[in-house]
Length: 293
Figure 1 (cartoon, rainbow, N blue to C red):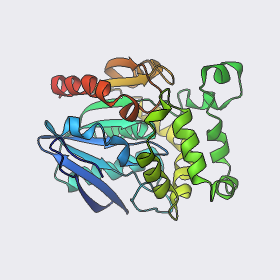
Figure 2: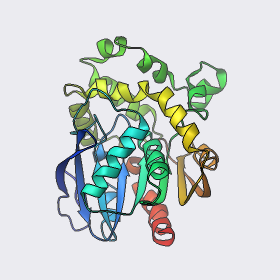
Figure 3: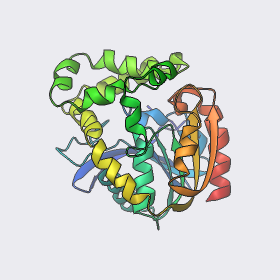
Figure 4: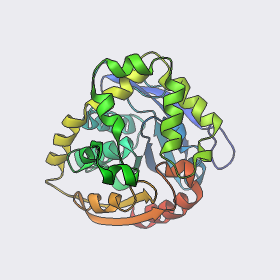
């Protein structure tokens, strides 16, 4: 369970949006902030950051299409469609303008949300992600640089192959998720048992692994969507956050191709900042949101 700053459980709900159904958590009051998780995580990823935001903001933390306790539709796993899911959800919840915090795939979806719904997004926090179409694919190659830097994203090619990953992962969701979560962190002990159990529960459900793989398999579509969107840079303020042991300052470098007003910060951490260094992340994110929105 996730709690707000008063120790009260966050509210949960479901909404039919954009041809699917999203499960979401919400808490707090004030201007709206939507939190978009990555893979292989769910909205539970934000449990430490939410109580830091709820004294000042209304927080909405959905499970993305096909993930967590959201529905598992057959298609629609490109980042543009998934961003439209979130735009419709926020409208349904009565939030006309809002800030976006996204991490991993949720950051790429968050960028598409800001690019496609420019009148509604007033700030973007882009956390630990690389853009398909702008160098992400380069890290799938077996090179000395990728291997030595820890940025050999071997699983992207594996996930892209149809049918075989489903066959090999079935029954081993716990082993895969535990390995991926811990291996990408410089502080593996922050992958606590409650989080592992929640992620394994969700990705072990019927359609869970299929949906996860569908997100990766839409990567070439995402690449073209990003190239199109990048032709008009974002005018909103962007905060690009990285972990020194993973993507680091490349979050800021790459985001400068997509937005005019970019600020960067790198933490002494790995890939999952909101679980590894939530206090430090809150200390950077809260002033940014207060000053820039």
